[in-house]
Amino acid sequence: MKHLIKHTCIIAALTLTMAAPAAAEPVKPANPAAYETPPSLADLVDKLSPAVVNVSTTQKQKPNAQGGQATPFGDLPDAPEFEPFREFFDQLQRGQNGGGGGGRNNEDREVYSLGSGFIMDATGYIITNNHVIEQASEINVTLSDNTKYKAKLVGSDKKTDLALLKIEAKKDLPFVTLGDSDAMRVGDWVIAIGNPYGLGGSVTQGIISARQRSINAGPFDDFLQTDAPINRGNSGGPLFNMKGEVIGINTAIFSPSGGSIGIGFAVPTSLAKTVINQLKESGHTTRGWLGVKIQEVSDEAAESLGLGKSEGALILEVTKDSPADKAGIKAGDVITAFDSKDISEMRFLPRIVAETKIGKKVDVTYWRNNASKTTQIVVGKLDESEDEADNTAPASEKPKDKGMPTEVVMGMHVTPLNQPVRDALNVEAGVEGVAISDVDSGTEASKRGLRRGDVIADVNGTVVKEAKDLQKAFADARGKGRKYAMLKIIRHKETAYVTLPTEEEKAAKPDDQKEAQHPHRDKK
Image (cartoon, rainbow, N blue to C red):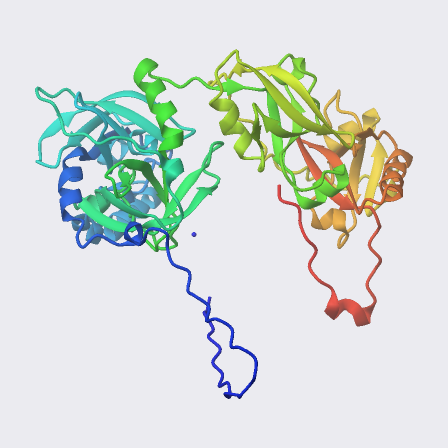
């Protein structure tokens, strides 16, 4: 986003009285024809290309506080003829900002962008990426025959980076169909058609490199990865299987240089179909809702909970009066199945819930107190307008309070939450637990990100209010043979679970320093 080593040796022939074993047969494909590359893709491309379009947008941008523009001149269209001017424009922009230039610098300016899309039916509905048309004041679509249309935005969805456009044509338009991305296997051939760098319709071929990729682009990451060359301007374009069906919408690339290095990502049609149908029907999306915040279950967290393997979604918080709350789900539970679908990884739960019909009663399996339990939940409706929580709040920078009474547990200096402590560490009223006033450097607590101002609310589900509660919780975990304990941490209104070894790490001797290994860190 290996090197093959062949060993060769000479084996002397020996005369033996035993029968020679039968020669091993090479593995052969069940259907060799299915693995053959067609002699040419020209016939297929001829059929598909007319349905692939160029999408260009215009945006109005305000000047910034220094009188310059809000974004650099690098936002020029992705066309080769503009490349020689980018550095000059960037220098000019820096000069104007630094020198307080006037004139047109204080006026709004138009910014252009280019992308791709494809026609999904004869009436002129077009699928593209949300980031291609976001905040556009004008959207234009150019067909392969150079016919141009003004496009209307029917609806868009930031969470999946999809958008639906509509153009009005006086004739039926060429279109392509959405295929089954779930049927695609790693190694299957694919074709990408789009508008890279503003060059117009370009065709590239490759294979599916991986499935169900998460690139932290949104809550429903489930990308197809391909090595078919995808570059700037390909966004929103189709990724086809060899039947000519769209199985993905090209969305992102991994590239240090900005160009293709063979790692591209496409939204699978299995995810896109529901979103596009909802946009077409109502102009917006409707999703199921549980009312929980979740976290990945690491190997250490699974061990601390007595869970056989690292699977499921660990519940951080439950919204009051939400469907999950009404069903009795609590923080610390691990959801392992939802509506008869196993949750092998945390990231699968949001998508499954989102695609569940609102009002449907579903069975939910969860892990609590060393046992698997099942409850029923009536799926609610997600409020798409809710702002996402800010979990990047800075840590408190206040100096240490020497008068604060603390005890050291596993390298953490902890103190009960009385009012002076709350004031000193900016801990909100209503938050319960023990506060961390300092963390010794080099300890596991320090290595795993615990810091001053954090509040330890519970350990393995046991509430802690004093240092002795914390010590007892670690002792109880050791008594059960657990190598790790799971701490519920509250930091700036946000909750997270962090695992710590139940045995305190012994200080390394000077002679042992070279052999010390970097500890495993929790995924957060």
